[in-house]
Every structure is written in structure tokens, then in C-alpha cells.
Length: 619
Ligand code: SFD
Ligand code: AMP
Image (tube, rainbow, N blue to C red):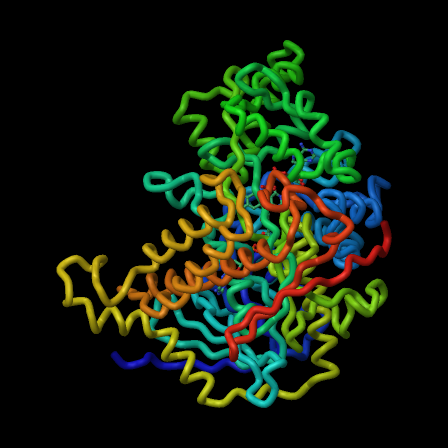
């Protein structure tokens, strides 16, 4: 089977991923770098790609500085507490001080934001504002598409590897990928690269299997590419042990924030008890974070988890109780509340509205089951896995600063959104903002480093053979057995995904093990992961779509292995409700209020793990 043709693209800035942060990056790069060639590569089509492709019902990161609601310092305090003491204050502050302007831009471009009678934005909680957000993604994509120009936007091209400079492996040189609808390689030779390709769902076995497979909370298209691209070239990562376990409406994965904060609903167990009251004492074990307001996300989970573990479920979101209270017996008010309840899901998680319809649930009459979902590895919601990046020059101490804001430890390689670690609670608006900041810094870097990268044929040819191998393998061996999916010479990406999910679920603290693991279990899990990674060289793909799935599972395997190695290294349970180390069940601020970082060395195959200090900047 011959290798397909190659198109080579040369540019100044390459943005990988056209989601929220990628669109922000494209818009901003155009503003600061009009003389530069800025190229975006996206595996889908940017109007509906990424986590916001299915719409949103809220902007969850907005300071409201013009109304005097919050300052960026308030935001830093909130985020650090929610992460049980660990977030990079410089990075969080940087998002906080710029995010409002991004929200105002989104409104100017057509995003309908709910307003009060006095014209102020409506609020859900302290940081969250409601939107009619079904179309947030096309609204964010339009200015990005315009800024780039059609000749600079490569859609339906999946990136599989980053390229480094032949003369200097510590410097970025571009990326390589293939067309998902055409037999073609794309080689992007770039002076700077911005990683904007999202977080990771489906690393852990989801609760929805078989008939429900494909239904997860975070986007199924968030395949861990940001991490899977950066780790193999030796980029320093941080907080990869961290995960987000969302409390969600059962089976449809409807988010709960609107229900807790806007409708003021509570959850009760089968005895009618509210765990925030019956489990209040449990928070005292986790001071000073236990008494933070609001209770940190993992601890809210932890309180509910204790009820579930003790067999006190099902847990019900008392939608009927909350709606009745808000309607005060007035049918017109009830109509408004009912519309808002359905819109919350129709804007963002249609599957939840379908679940309600399918199960004859009228939320004003019937409460809905909620559960703790499977873990997600991500950096933009209540999770903080990602690259260790430089902070901004005016805020960051030397330990957190090496020249250019949002630049990773690989020179010229920037990250944003889910790709940046230790900077959570960005959500859609903060990810867009971080993309903008990364692009501005990349333009700055280019002014100081204008030289083109050196990428010879050897690196490209080697990668092309690797990328195409699953198609070759299938072609060579397809006749060996009668069933295409059962063959001694290869396994399919779907089979590989199931194997990865089983390992993660059973050894790394997934749902079937009550989010619990320990040192020996992780060590065994890592052995199994190493074998899986060896076997991934024997993936078989029947077509281009499966070839994309192959590289997605490779990315997810990098995420899984990195997650387990970090879990093993951190000898404490810092985030009960996200995961439990049964051999180190307590939070240990004295020894472990530090970031856990790692670097993979491709030459030796070794992972190096170490800590970085937590430095106060504005708390
Ligand atoms: O309620 C490649 N999010 C919410 N944010 C909010 O502000 N409000 C909400 O209400 C939110 N909620 C929510 C959210 C997400 C989801 C799925 C649901 C509910 C159901 C979070 C935000 O969506 C999230 O924080 C941002 O989107 C993160 O931005 P970014 O840029 O880091 O990731 P992305 O948008 O997914 O974009 C990634 C892009 O990369 C592409 N890509 N391209 C080329 N090659 C590859 N190999 C690639 N791999 C990926 C993707 O296609 C995508 O375009 S609530 O739950 O809190
Ligand atoms: P979710 O819908 O769960 O994704 O949450 C949306 C936003 O509301 C996020 O900023 C959450 O951190 C926040 N949130 C969700 N539940 C609560 C709660 N009970 N108290 C405070 N904030 C919450």
C-alpha cells in the first residue's frame, strides 16, 4: 500500500484545534500579527467542533468587573479553594483579569446573554451567567474563520504528532497529520505552535456502555490530543493526577450547576436526607478547605459519595420542590421556570432533555436521579491537568516565568484551554481568553525568534510510516481470519479503547472501584498500560475514520499512563470525591501542597516525576 501524497504548509503560527481556545487564538493572532501567516488545523469543522459544539447554557467564568461583582483576586481565592489549595495563582489571575472582555466580544458577535430589567446581565452564581447558548460555537468560530482567511484553515485534518527542530529538539517545528476524508498527509512547518485541542473523555470506562456508548458528559471528541501530542516530545506536564468527577443527572449527563445555583434545588437520598446537612461534619477533616464557601467541588462530591457508598441512594435532584418554590403557586411563573428548566438542557445537553422525555419526567412533578460520573482528565472545568506553562511577565515569580506567557517548556510551543495545567475554572470564556493570551505571546516570541524551523525528510518520513501503519497492517492481514474484528495480527481501535478503559477503571480509581486505588494497584496498572502501549503498534484500521480512531486511542493511552504515574507519585488524598488513595487516605498539606510535574524522555522511555512549589501571589 503506497503512502499518500503530502501537502507541506509553512507558517508563523500554527493553531492546533479550532475549539474555544483555538478560536480565541486565531482572532487575537490576527490582531497583533497582521503580517504573519497564521494557520489553524482542525479535525472537524470549526462551527460545531469541540466541547461547545453541542451548545452551552451558561458562561461559567465571568467576573462582572463593570458591575463591581468580583475582582480577579476574588476569583483566585475561589479557584485555589475549589482545588483544595493548589492552582497557579498567576495563570488564574491572568484569565480573571481578561475574561470579561472576551464575554463582551462574544455578546457583540451575537451571543444572547440573559438580562435583568435594568439591562445588567442575569446571574446564576457568583461567576456564572446564563445564555441562550445553543449557538455559542458558530458565534465564536465566525470571527476566527474570518481572521484566518479560507487559505489558512485546514479542516478535517487530524494532527497526530508534533515536529521538533532537527537541530534543537527543545524547540517546536510544527506538526503532522492526515486528512480524515482524503488520502493525504499534511506537514505543517511552523515557527510557533499553539496547542488548543481540548481535554480527555473516555479514558475511563464510562457509566454508559454498550447501548449507551458514546454518551458521556464531556465531548466524545475530546480525545486527549493536547496531552497526547505534548507528552511524547518531552513537554513538562503538571497535575496530571488531577481529574474532574462531575455530579450529573443520571444517564443523560445533564449538568447540575444551574439547578443548584439558579433554581436552588437540593439533592436528597432515599431517606429524604440532604447530605450537605447530614454530612456537614465530614468537611471538618479537610480544613482549611472544608469551610470554604462554596464547599469545594470534590468535597461536595465526597459528601454525596458517602451516602451512595452507604447504600442510601438513589440520589434525587428535587426539581419539583425547587420549581414549586420559585413559582409560588403562580401558573405564569411556573411556565417561566419550566421553560428555563428545559432550555438549560436543550441549549447544552440535549440528551438530558431526551432522557426526561423518554422516562416521562416532567421536572415540575418528578425529581431526577443524579450520580457521580466517571473521571475526566481536563484543564478548563473543575479539573487542572495540563502543560506546565510560563505565566505573564508582570505577575509571575521566576519559578513560574520563562519568557513568554503560556509557553510550555518546549520553546515556541504554547498551550491554552484544556491544554494548560494548574489553571482551572476557565470554562468556555476563559479558554477563549487563554487562547487570545497565548496568541499574543506567540506573536511576541516571533518578533524575538524569526528563524524558520529545520525539519528534514527523515523525521517526516519516519512519522508518515508510523501514522499509516494501521491501514497497512489491516491490508496485509485482513484475509487471515474470517471475521475482520478477530485477527491474530491486529486489534481494532475500539478494542484498544475498551482495554484502556478497563485498566483505568479497575486500577486508577474509576466508578467500579469507587474511585479508590493504592500504590500496588497503580504499579500493576502501569505494567498493564506499558503492555497496552506496546500493543498499540499492532492497531489495524479499515479506513481513514478508523485511522483517526487509532491515533485518538494512542492519545488517550498517553493520558491514562501519565494520570496513573502522577497518582502514584502524590502520596496523599488531596481531592476526596475525585479519588481516594486507600494507602494515604488523608490530605497532607505539610508535604504535598505542591504541584506534581512530569517529563517523558522518548529516547530512554523514562518518566521523570518531581514537584514544583506552590507560590502565593494574591491570596
Ligand atoms: O455546564 C483536534 N463547558 C462549559 N463551559 C461554560 O462556560 N459553561 C458551561 O455551561 C459549560 N458546561 C459544559 C462544558 C462542556 C460540555 C461538553 C458540556 C457542558 C456538556 C466547558 C467548555 O466547553 C470547555 O471548557 C471549553 O470548550 C474548552 O476549550 P478548549 O479550546 O480547551 O477545548 P475544545 O473547545 O473542546 O476544542 C478542542 C478542539 O480541538 C480539536 N481537536 N484538531 C486537530 N487534530 C486533533 N488531533 C484534534 N483533537 C482535537 C477539536 O475538534 C476541537 O475543535 S457545564 O458542564 O459546566
Ligand atoms: P456544572 O453545571 O456542574 O458544570 O457547574 C457549573 C458551574 O457551577 C461551575 O462553575 C461549578 O463549579 C458551579 N457549581 C456547580 N454546583 C455548585 C454548587 N453546589 N455550589 C457552588 N457552585 C456550584
